[in-house]
Each structure stands twice: as C-alpha cells, then as structure tokens.
Amino acid sequence: MAEVGRSLRRAVRIVAGVAAATFLALGGLPGCSIERSGGTHKKSSVPLVSEVAWPAMRTVEHAEKPRVVVEYGVWIPMRDGVRLAADIYRPADDGTYPVILSRTPYNKAGAGKASIDRYRSYVERGYVVVVQDVRGRGDSEGQFRPWFQEGDDGYDTIEWCGTQQWSSGKVGMIGGSYGGYVQWTAAVRKPRHLAAIVPTVACPDPFVDGLINGPTGLPSPICVSWYFYTSGRLNQQSHAVEWARVFEHLPLVELDDRAGRPMPMWDEIIANSRLSPYWEPARYQNKLDTVDIPTLNISGWYDDEQISTIRNFAGVSADGNPGADGVHHALLMGPWPHATNSGTKIGEIEFGPTAKIDMDGYVLRWFDRWLKGIPNGVEHEPPVRYFTMGDNQWRDAGAWPIPGTVFTDYYLRSGGSANTRMGDGVLSTEAPKADEPADEYVYDPADATPFITDPMFSQVGGPDDYSKIEEREDVLVFTTPVLTEPLQVCGPIRATLWASSDATDTDFMVRVLNVHPSGFSQRLCDGVVRARFRDGMENPTPIEPGKVYEYEIDVWTTCQTFMPGHAIRVEIMSASFPQWDRNPNTGGQLGHTTDGRPARQTIYHDASRPSRVVLPVIP
Image 1: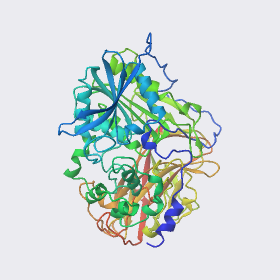
Image 2: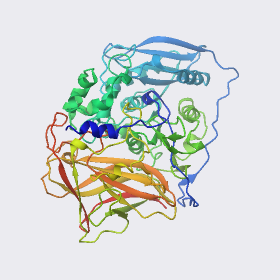
Image 3: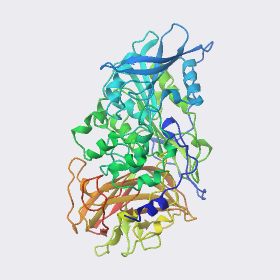
Image 4: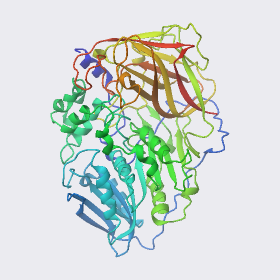
C-alpha cells in the first residue's frame, strides 16, 4: 500500500475553529449555512412541533451568596479497597445540599478557570460539587481500564456522595463524552441516591461508533490518539505525535507502537472485534429500560458521538413518549460538534446568533426541579428541543422522531455512469424501472477514499466541503434537482443498498450532503456497513463474490432545512479514511492485515433491487 500515505495526507486537514481538546469541554460549537437563500419557511402544522423562544431561566434567589469551601484530594473508597480522589466545592455552613457529581478521566486538577467558575456558581446556587478522577487517572489509585471500570466505581461514588453530612441525599451527574458515558453506566446499576443525570455527547456502547469498537468491528484509526492522550495518570502530549503518519500505518493493531507509547488496551479491543460476552461489562444501552430517573440528553448534529444521545433518549422513553412512565426525559440537539455550545460557527458554516445558548442556566433549571423539588415547570415543557440548520431555528417537539414525520424514499437513479459529481446520478422520489443499469466502481485500499477530519481528534468531521472528493471515480454521486421550496429533513436516516463485490469482505458507506448554489457540498451525516457484519456484530460471515446482497445502513441523524437553490446529495463509496479503518477486501483477521487488494463494487438500482435512502421529511 505504498500510495496510502499520499492518500491520507490529501484526506486530513484541520477543521477551522475547533479547540484541540474538546473531550475536556461540556459545551461546543453551533452552525449551518454558507449563505441564506431566499424563500419563506413554512411552519409545521404538526401540533406537537413548534418554534419557540427559550424559557426564562428562573433562578433561586439567595439573601446572601454562601462562602465556598474547597476540599482537595478527598479519598472516596471503592468496594475493592481502591481509593479515588475528588475535589469538593461546597457551602461553608453546616447545611445539607444536593450534590452535582462529575467523574472525569481528564484530570480534575486540569480544569480551567471557566470550569472552576462554573463549580463556584453551582455552590452559590445551593449545591455541593464533587469532581473526581476516575480509577487510574490523576490522583486516583488503581489502573485505568477504559469503559470496563466505570459502572461499579460510579455506583460506589454516588452512594458515598449521598450519605455525607453535607448531602441532602440527592445526587445528580454532569459531564461530556466519556463523562457522559460514566453517567449511564452508573445509572443502569440503579444507585439509590442518584436522582437525575445530564449526559452530554455521551459515548455509546461498543460497535455503535469508533470510540470503542465501531460498526466495522474495529476502532477508528483516529481513536488511537484518544487512548494515547489518556494513557498513564496524566494527560499525554498528543501534539508531539505526527498523527497522519500514525494513522496510515498497517496493521492497525500496531498504531499504539507507531505512536511511541504501547497501550495494552488498544491490542485488547482489536482482539475482540465482534460482539461477545467480553463486552458486556462495558455496555449500558441494552439496559436503558431499567433507568427510572430523569435524564437530560444533550448533543449536536456534528457531534461524532451523536448517535448515542438520540438512542439513549429513545431507550428511556416509553413507546416514544418520554413521560409516559411518569419519569421525565428530555433531548436537546443543537448545531454543535463534540464541543457543544462553544460558538456559532463550524468551519465555513455559520448558524446565527441563537446557536449558542445559556447552557448553565438550562442545566441548573433541570437540577433545581429534580434535585431540589422547585416547581419551575420543566416537566410541563416539550421534551425535545432541536435546532434546524439552514433556516437556523430552534423548535420544540413532543417526541422523537418528530410527530408527523413522513419517511420518504429517495431512490438512487442513473444510466450506469454515476461516478463523480459530473456523472449522471440522480436522487429521485420516483422508483426505478426494471431495466435500469447498475453502477460500478473500484475501491482500492491503497488509495482509500478520504474523509476530511482533524488528526488531533478534537473534531471527527464537520460540515466540510466534499466537492473535490466527489471528483474521484470511486465515489458514486446522486443529486436531486435544485429545490424551489424549503424542504425540512429532520430525524434518523437509513439507507438500503443492493450491492455485490468480487471480494469476500468489503465495506459500503453512505453520506448525505447539502449542495449549496456555489457548489459547496456540505457533509451532513454518514454511515457504514462492513459486509461480514451484515447480519449483526455477533456473527461475522464472509460474502460470496459476485452475489447480490441487501445491506441496511444506519446513516445517523441530521436536521437540515434545504433552502431554495440548494439540492440534496447522496454519496456511495467503500472507504472513508481515517474515519473508519480501510477494509483490505481479503476477509483476513481484522486489525492484523497489512496486504490488501482492489475490489470491484456494483450498486444495483432497478425495480427489483431499489437502492435508496429514507429521509425524514417534516411536512
């Protein structure tokens, strides 16, 4: 694969405006629309959807702000005798207060001034804040074994917080990314004192995305930079590594060595490349129906962990109604990347002044209701608040998916020459005819189709321009006619591909984009299927060369109003590197192969094999 280095360096660029360590942040960036085209937006007639202003942030008035006391390095014992270190911010008096707990792998001592100011403001509002280093990180004892240790440690920490002399007995949790994951793994264990959680951009179970093991059975190559950053007790100096060269190395199992810091956990997760009992201690999404406390779920349309937030909200909601079981759950989705609510722009896309909100006020209203019992009306507000990109509006809904959504088939159509954006590919609501010819392309892992991303893992993809990548022959491009009226697409997207390959294993990717009048082809969302996992992550089986299979692909979720003058586009390819590892097309052991071969791929879209994407259209 001599050409792979050149291919990667073409693929990787820094996404503008994103800070390098977004896993440390609770908030993030908003955004969408290079320019606003004309046209009047038609408001939805669905009664459970509305355009609304933000509710007034009701504050608790104190006659005098309490003096803040900080206790550093407090030991919290775990059931196995290991002690975890925490800093505690609390009022100086002898009263009892609800506790807001944050558990982090990013070093509690490394919190910036903004975080310290936030903790102090929470104390002044009448809370105790506990910030804890997870096992094996920072000042805490033990060994850091990501994912597998957090459920029991979280449970023990919550119960300790709920029984201290300064505690009212009610504990809430905050945190983003891994700090969101730790909330869920504790919540499904049902600690008695846990009263509410606010998971932000929470990491999902394995085989949902690339942080642990993704839908390819392997972690994204980019993930090695996270494992590097969190290896040892202190945050490592990731900027010293030339990550683009690390990502291009094969086999994947050696990326930690190539980065210069061997990490046994990297080898361990690659060795477990299918869903098996090994992963059960790290899973929580198969237990969401046991969660009986209020949850406020926060993410963004360009969060690289977005899919878990939406699935989690659905998993705790009874029959799509987040309040049907008497427990209130809420979903907040903004125009943000992984660093939620840190600005109004991602790259070249500006989302307007309302894109950044008063997140602290939003979260504290939640805790005031569920930790203090203040009747501020949170439970009577619509549970879903979401931002539609393009027309840049906040809206409310009574459930997710949005009531009244029309799931609409958009068929892949062509005369057999859909390669590149200059080809004849069309995206149409009209079903194909019986004799419509198939499209072909060759996927070569030595020159893998690129994915635009930040090599420092601060943001895995954004609203980037894919028009240049659409000039490659290994990308099939299907585009609607230019729209004459606004079209709102908001919700989960799925694709069905009828495809064959001359390989025994390969990949198929689907990407949805917004094409601007200028030609800017803005990525919205994408998804992948690895052929050997077509029937589930538990049972990998090879495919028969030349045989046509029906593949179902989760293309994640977006919320975009396509304005007049714009068009909807779908790309089909077999690599998105380094978002996902390159399939060598050999059927060999995942993560251990160094040699690959080109694969000839055929995508069918005739009457009996109607390849299509299903878009959630809001009337």
